[in-house]
Image (cartoon, rainbow, N blue to C red):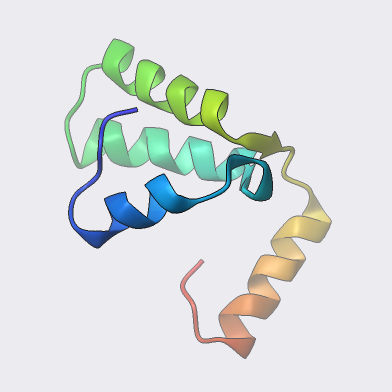
Length: 80
């Protein structure tokens, strides 16, 4: 996995991999950001997403997950 900038890199490296769950939708958003904003080519984008998926548990996104995420936006003033 390529390092990310700043303190986020340190945080990610300190995570215990078995304790991290990535919703599949998150990987889709990563793909969108890498393609659109970072202007990576499709092969590079796919490789980066697959590397994240190899490092952490990927959970299927469901309607219940989205509802919980919406609750977090209200309860903790987070962006979705």
